[in-house]
Length: 91
Length: 237
Image (cartoon, one colour):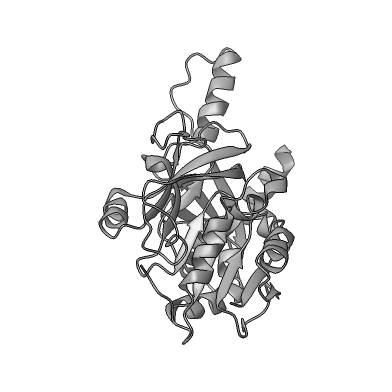
């Protein structure tokens, strides 16, 4: 079962990387850019019978290693096989 | 006093720590590989700097869950002395042995430079030979050293006098300009509540011989040696 973990810095934690990327985009003419924060995508394939079961396991993974609760929040989203292929096709 | 120096794939300060302990302090020391589950007969475990497991995911994240760190968790719970420097500090935070986390430097630059540290707490086995307010000079070398912790945890750190070192001027003034990485309250090093686990971003092992430009790092090791009494328990001041 494939799920996607999105890890992002918690609100209030300064994202210096995002700020640098934002400055670069403004320099490229994107003056309408209001805010930008950089996060991480972690695609996980876990041996589970259902999405909720996979979600439970991946939630444990997030708590144990994938996210640092001091700094980061995370969300877990189911991934359709077709959408993964679509992402690859774009590359 | 017997020292163990932990080695992860990607650790880089292990040989420097080993050298200081064996050649400068003339104390027994051994390397401890990251897969070890038993630390053996040691009084102090050192987590050196470097890029353990390539610092993949987050600095110190994978190392913080490795077998040797589980052994260190038990060792620390029994009062064993643990010193983590640079990546070692990041690992101790990731492992939950110290509160908080270390973020990308605010300046976005990797900082490799000499820093001044003002000593806030001399009631630890690592600093008992120092004076409160004493200024030490030690190098830093890191890209992710901005200490971050939430407000309740910061209040706890203050209440239990867990802040040990802060970045300061040569005169000991804690200023924004003296802060090389944007660290909260200029924090450079903290201890756990029990005082036996120290994490610090600066490198004491790189300031332990005059030939490398300074000996202030040696004061930490000398404090440690002085804190070991004959029956194997550790003295606080």
